[in-house]
Image (cartoon, rainbow, N blue to C red; front, side):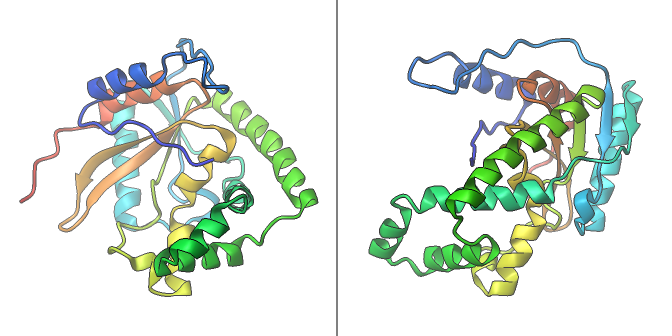
Length: 242
């Protein structure tokens, strides 16, 4: 369920990369034609989705992004969101179910201490599923996808944190069980969306004295064009820092 996408310094380069990545290929059983369609300029703002403890600097960045959109004629609202936390928890369940098919043997062979630690901590958060719990996760995915598609029918864009916390130090997640759980909790907004197949775009909008600052925009399936339109409005030229 994890996904990857292009990285770029401009929305124009993102469009170019996405155009190349989204070309049809008969070897891809999941390829679907995306046809850009008109959309209402309405964006939902979620500073603390599902009770996420969001750093004030990130909340400020999200609020500033919403104001930028308002200045360009967008309507901003704060509607109630469908579940994200439940989607994150079920995503972890499917991750571990898939990893069990050969991944645990590879983990034992490699004996990498950090990888072993991460797998152990994930297993605490999402115990290895049974056939019944796995099938219930798939049923829940259909329900949650339906709820989110309904949400995006009213609000084509959701502005939300990339992570609830500013960037963590390197290897922070392997320091302790508590640190690992803190990282997983903070990154709920980026773990949950792929469970419903939702595209996301992260835009750097500024920086603190030590960290880059950014926001995440989510949209419905096949609506990457909306996210790229937002990138044109929200991505300023960020000065290089030596």
